[in-house]
Image (cartoon, rainbow, N blue to C red; front, side, top):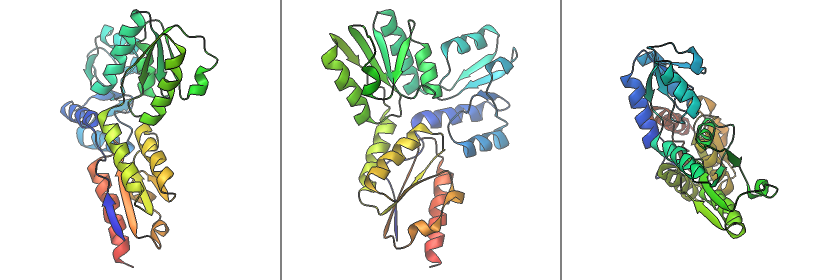
Length: 278
């Protein structure tokens, strides 16, 4: 069986940057999981004494708080600084961008529409920057019963599928006098999605590696499944079921933006070892 990695996969710029920041700040705590990969978070705690807390109120004055890549709500960031916590901001710059857009456009009188998952930490943070509030939707249907202003500013969660974002934009544009659409989907997300679309059309089995709670990994899996029925989302080599590869000739592999290279390599090694024993 041929095993091939997608042309673009794995760690993005924002994740690499955040991990470097965490490694440089030993004996600190991240507020919320730094990235959506539990194995990498375990490594940071073991090797660099970077712990994890889910409560921003648990930090005392002088403590070092590393802000997660997804960002945090504006009021919580302000509270940390007011309490003299040493804040080290590892928010991805691609996430900071929609935060700034929401604040600026809201203050200019635009209705803010955010395409994304309202329960996702990135969107909780982005929404908090809209001075006069924002509406979060996942489909055009959710817009149908909303009474909106004539001026709309539209942003997207950084890890969403471009084609789904365009559906939202195409619904809004003919119905409002002014719709400003900001492309806040990050380059790495787009490149990884295009690469998984390409390889999944050739493969007869696909393995997508990433955290079960990773939004961008779920999007990769969704695209892969559209093109290759036998697509599987795993966190590491321990999730592999080698019966998946019976009778297969081409195994494609991709990984989410928060999946480290060492996990990807472990998966490839496990599949290759299994094939060699046949």
